Length: 258
Image 1: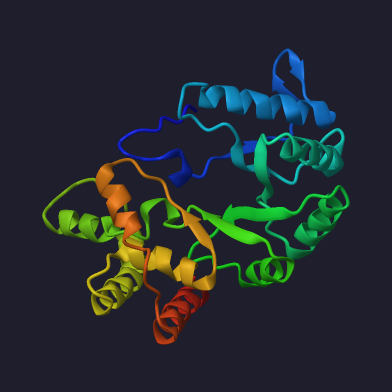
Image 2: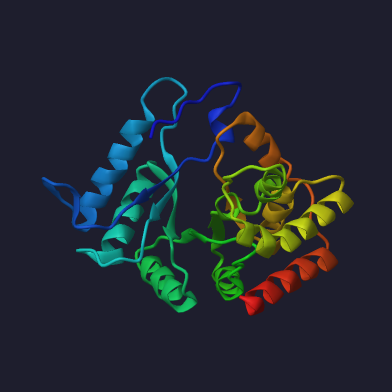
């Protein structure tokens, strides 16, 4: 994808991340293996970012997409990262989808053997799946946790409550079913209440701030300016210990109920 810098956004305000997908073939005619393939993929990502004035000249975070078998393995990635960091093409390297603490530790140590530090690990994470053991392991190793799908594809927003109102008004079809509404309404009403006590924060802002307070960096999808403005409201404040504990208790109760 191409990133356009505009609307008063300076390049320094944008963190550019990309990933290397460790599969044997990137196209039907191109075999992907070893260090060279990593470097070629990185160069292709930089080319897609564009060469116009103001476009990024390097990638801030380059990540190993999945813990999959690869010809050359993580050693090839580590060798390539050591070279491209020295060349100024990449600022830092990361992993992605390493959800098991021990597997992550082994990967971090292996990459350190090539003289490169793992800056971040991107995993699916939300207040409904807080990954406490993984968070603790990452803290011990100095690895930041990037949380993708932090709003559970829209579930942790007001959309479900809006659907409930539409059903009551006679709508025949909504995104969420009556069963889903019944299951998640108590949690969303709790987030709504906690948001009210924190200066009128929205459900999604509370859900994101929960992860920020845990120490993670949530990245949520944005389709409109309104979405972006809502997400920015998760910055600049922190949930207190009582709110964090209440949310965790509710999520644990829901998990036990099934």
